[in-house]
Amino acid sequence: MKRRSLLVSYQTIVIREVTRFTRVWLRTLIPPAVTTGLYFIIFGTLMGERIGSMDGLPYSDFMMPGLLMLSVVLCSYTNVASSVFSSRFQHYLDEILVAPIPDFVVISGFITGGVIRGMMIAVIVLATSAMFVDISAWSWWLVMLTLFLSSVLFSAAGLVNALFAKNFDDISIIPTLILTPLIYLGGVFYPVSMLPEKWQAVTALNPLFYVINATRAGFSGHCDTSIAFAFGVTLVSAAAMFLLALWLFHRGTGVKS
Amino acid sequence: MDALSVRELSKVYKGGVKALDGVSFSVGEGDFYALLGPNGAGKSTTIGIIAGLVRKTSGTVSVFGRDLDSSTMAAKSLIGLVPQDFDFSQFDRVFDVVVNQAGLYGMRRALARQRAEQILRRVELWEKRNAETRELSGGMKRRLLIARALAHNPKLLILDEPTAGVDINVRRATWDLLRLINRSGTAIILTTHYLEEAETLCRSVGIINHGRIVTSTTIDDLMSLAEKEDIILYSDSAIPTEAAERLGGTLVGARTMELSVAHSRGLNSVFAELDSMGVRIIGMKNRLNRLESLFMHLTGGEAKSSAPAEDDPVFGGDAAEGDRE
Image 1 (spheres, rainbow over the protein chains, first blue to last red):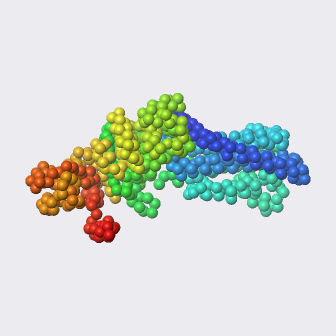
Image 2 (tube, each protein chain N blue to C red; image 1 turned 180 degrees about the horizontal axis):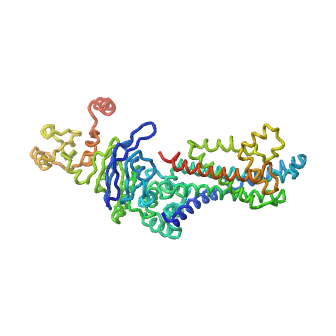
């Protein structure tokens, strides 16, 4: 296929994906705004005043990058996981498998759908946060790149999950039992330096720790580890997860018998 | 050049189930080909491999000379698939289903919209273009599957049981549509359980059983293999028992007789004999259609009589007698 035709195929998959989640925008785009608002009211305003500052920042300001990443990561993941699994389950993935589209274009299309939803969520969460904190950044480039890479990483992870899933439980278990705890333990609500050394070492194995810290560094310049290292881990993880998803799809895992 | 050439195709599923065992057949350009076989014979696996949904274990597939392994994209772009199940998102609009399909094959959006309008008008779904697919009737969904498969103007259309579970009107309308598509030069491969459908529509036929092609030939050549005709005769008065005995038939009612007539004997002699005994025949039909008889023969199946056997525990003589008491 010519490059322009491939671009049209890619564009078609992306349009389908975006149409899918915008059609039910009340369910896919609004909940993170509500959740973020509640976090700010309860932990920022009511409890935050008693907590005081964290790493030299007002608690709401400290918490904001983590809350942003919490929503972006979960939405990117669940978007692709549920979309790919539904299309497998209802067989409309076959439309794509039958068409002359290289695997990397298919994977890129689905992941782009997840990234677009992740970025839309980021804008919504930032707008909600602006009602409670002053939004300013140490480096908007770092913020945007980290958000983008995190969204790619977790969209690809959602796709991998969807390829292995046998039923709808299999795509809800991972975000609930693994992803959410990893996000909370990755330093959304506290600096890792507060933990005992042993738990700091354990946290260093959590990829969400780097993702959250790279984002926080983008907003405040403060990072629990080296900014370059946190960003590097995010970049390498995103690339590795994309390649894993591509390899599994190419092998036909979960999509071809 | 053949529209499709399948050579020594084998498929062994996980767990060692051998679905295909050296399947070979060809479909000519512009041909209308029926792939027949009992359930589990390997029809869907064969189609799945050709369409790229199932991985083959060995063998080759080429579409208009393009090898499916080495020229995958070129080969796939020539195929349109109409699956057995409704596999579009139930929330997508009818128009979007066709436009997106064209888009997946690289057709630009503006062109895809024009193409979608042409096809939806052709399958008489244009009025339903803004409906969600879940709002369509079963027959409309079937037509949408065909419309979607035609979106990129394929040269080879593959249909997996396109009329399964639809009423006779929809089936006839689908037949008309398929004839129209075939007349426009598109080669068609059809799997079906309705042998009448294959006999009515197709010019060539392949019969697959236990993962092997039993025969692949033209319908005419296949029909010439038939040695006898299984018929049911209807009279306007009671048929004497001796008439049935002389002709080797079976009375399935006072005025109805089933009969196997060898082609060498011919139907004229049967009618003449019945006429000489004063039996007037007012109607006749094939007990099995001719292709069905051959299919049964080639796949090792047995044609079952439409009349209940005497010793049938459910519908047989004793039970029937009992029911009447």
